[in-house]
Length: 156
Image 1 (tube, one colour):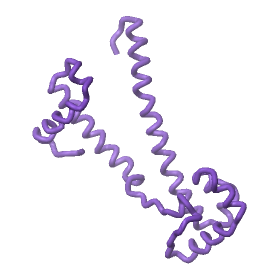
Image 2: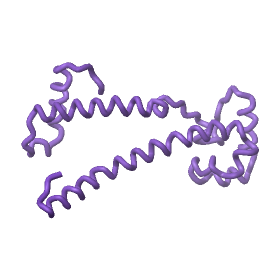
Image 3: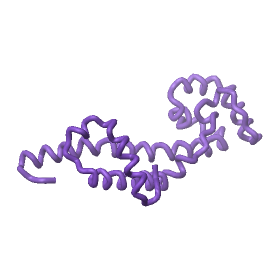
Image 4: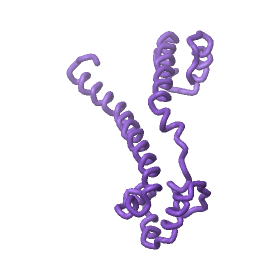
């Protein structure tokens, strides 16, 4: 939703704010909303820059399901995928989530090429998960802070 600094796009976005029924109950001025819209636009652009690697990452199907039909052009990866698909002990472990599957101690040594690629994939998502988790706590924290300040007759 990033746009160039024009007055036209934020005004178009104001029309979409009518979908938020609670906003009509508040006393918010259009100028304030424009400030919020511009701030969110900058934040959106920053997120796209910060998480560009995650957003553009190609998710290989065999990472999610090494037992599915996968076409791999790299011969080494093909051989290791065949090794995994014939390993009955690993197949039983795959019933759990794919993250747990790739983090088993039985994966890195016998399947080093697959492990190298899967490891990079697994490293990227916990990082974005932690950011998402922390941002999810922000409204709760702010509400608690607001309640604490009201009880002390203070402003945030």
